[in-house]
Image (cartoon, rainbow, N blue to C red; front, top):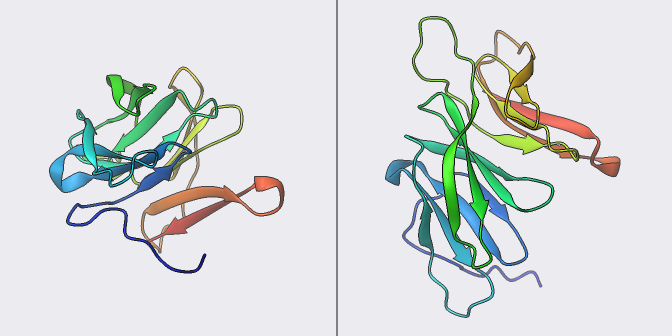
Length: 167
């Protein structure tokens, strides 16, 4: 079907994740994560996650049990358990984001995840790669002339190529 369909209006959306049961998206200006059920006709987006100062990028774990949300104004990636009805629970800081020296905001943006559950976050410093318990084990460098890294995603043949947007 090539006809676009409006699912929600008059609500801010920065990044989104689409699952079988619904869509999670961040609304940084409203400091929240919203959820739109795809199982209910005429569903409206509801506020399901609060905590991050400026929720930005988000990604679901490979087992579809947790949603990770990047806080571009804070120092953490937040983690929420996904309940059967799509609501989020047990929201808490999950992983510490490294900051440029003398700055208080990470400027962290988009996120992706490896098949084994390692979180990757695009930041001003470079890609920050977390292990499953939420510790950064690798911090890549970034091109210095082009600005901060803004998003990342696995794609290509067998979903094994990491694509990163800059600036």
